[in-house]
Length: 99
Image 1: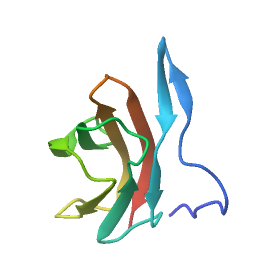
Image 2 (image 1 turned 90 degrees about the vertical axis):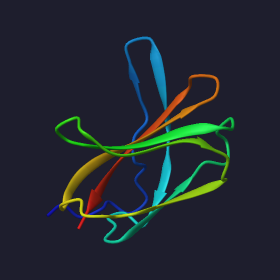
Image 3 (image 1 turned 135 degrees about the vertical axis):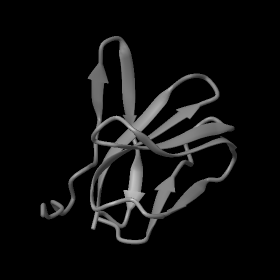
């Protein structure tokens, strides 16, 4: 299993013409509950958790919370993408490991 790098950010990159913003999450890696900071995201927003096969394992829309919380429910250990899309279409993403 991979270990987290202290002080490292999750993901900030450009994909084609769409800039993907950094998404803050903790704890990384997580076992049961993952917290996601969405303070700078225009509300309401859509939240998705996607496995490395591209399958959406969780999706919720019309969220207004500053800090979202995901309870792991039957997802196997592995790497996941957490993606938020705000009301203006901007995307925020981060990769996280589930233990």
